[in-house]
Every structure is written in C-alpha cells, then in structure tokens.
Image (tube, rainbow, N blue to C red; front, top):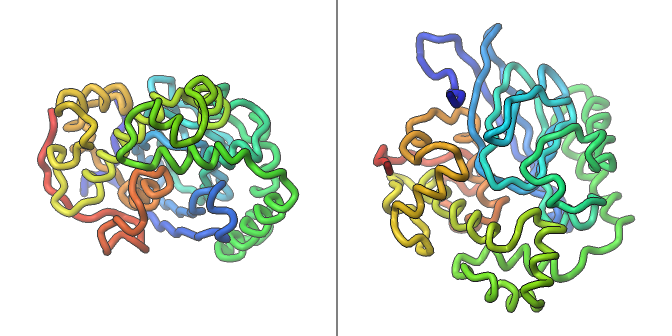
Length: 316
C-alpha cells in the first residue's frame, strides 16, 4: 500500500513552514529555485507524500532526520543528509519526520556543466551525494551548517558558492540549452519536430537527451505532457481532470494509462490523497519542471507557492 499523510484531525499534528529563495539570474539556466522547509512533528509522527517526476535534485538535511524515500516501485530507504536523485520519469514517494531541509534542483544544462556522468546512468535513482558524482556540491551542507540556522545567510552562502562554481566551469553545449527550452513548448509533441527545433539530427538528439536529460526524447515529451496536465489540475481554481488534460492526449483513458505508469495509482486515488508537502511547493515546482510559466500561474500563486482551491471532480 502506498503511504498516506497523517491528516485525521484526531491524529497527532505537524507544522510546516516553506520558504523559496531565487538565485542570481545567471544561475537560472542550471538550477531551480532554492527552497527550505521546516517540518515539526509530534513524537513518532511521520508525514508522507508523493512527488511528480522531476529533474535531478539535491536535498540537504541540516537538522533532524533525513527523509525516507524511493522512486516507485522500489522499496523505501533511509536517505543520507546529502541526498540526491537523478532525473525521474516516475513518482518519488517519501516520508518525513521533524527536520530542516534545503532543496535545490539541477536542470539538464546544470547536469551538463557540473555532473561528470551520463544522466541516463542515474535516472530514477536516489543516492548519497557524497558518492554519486555530485561531490562538487558536498560543501553546501557544511556551508548551511556553518550559519547556525540563519536561513537567509544559508541561502546567500549557497548562492555565492554556485556563482563561484559557475565562474570556473566551462560553458554548456548550446544544444543542451536549446533542447531544455524547446521541451517546455506545449505545441511540441513529436521527436522529429524537437530535433528540428534543436538544430540536430534525430540520432544526435537521442544521444544528447540520454547524456544530459536522462531519457529518450519521446519519454521527455510524454513526461512534459503529463506534467502540464497535472499542473493544471493542481493549480487552477476549481480544477478538474477533464479540464486539465493536455491537448496531446487522445482521450481520458490515454491520460489514465500515463498516470498509472508514472504515479503508480489512478488520478482519482491521487486526488483523494492529502498532499501536505506538495500542496505547499507545487506552484514553484511546476515552473521549475517547465510545465507552466511563472506568468501563467493564477495570481495568488505567482509569488507565494502553494495551490489554489479546486473541485473534487475525479478521473477513474
């Protein structure tokens, strides 16, 4: 059985505070927004949620207990303080207890610049950042620890470290940036069209996507189609699955098949689950994954994260 968050009012409580920090503009092609969340639970309480597919990510637990997590359908495992995940095409299930965590995503262009291994070799995996090719970022946990709980100082230290890393790292191949931007286009649903947009052959595109994006271009386009639909449902006021479907889905049954394959459950099951963590970060996460533009978010969500209220209409 998939984990569910503790949501019964009669059960022990938890509190969650989330903050986002936008990095210097020159870092935006390579990194997502930086976030920090502080979770405080009653003794013995864990909070569970299920995260949509995403680019590679790093999570630094600087107080409390690191998450327990897995990329489905793998078994849940205890994460280290510096935990990393590769690009994913399936859901990440996780459980948290009292903890303080900084998180930072790595766009494909960031992978191309800073990670010395093919993204496909670490897709749908979670590991120890000290031993998985992310060692260049290991000093970040020590920088966070050094400021003694001052979140603004920690964010400034992280930003400074990344700027220094950016200044001494060779530039990324232009086609990586072109592909990263192109797959955000909701009109693109064909690999040949993507190759033309990037300015390369289909075969070269396959190699580029495997090396830096983690998946074949067909999988990437499928993932973006799914994320656009999920974003509409989660973010739009009075959202419903029927109104959320991306136009590249043939019908609702097509979407349900994708949903089961990616999230390991039906859309109805997902809608009925509480999402105590994701509800607080979903808006910025969908911007970071290229599923929605910041300017296209409902006004209430553009700067504060979270989600708007929506209806309970379900898909089977």
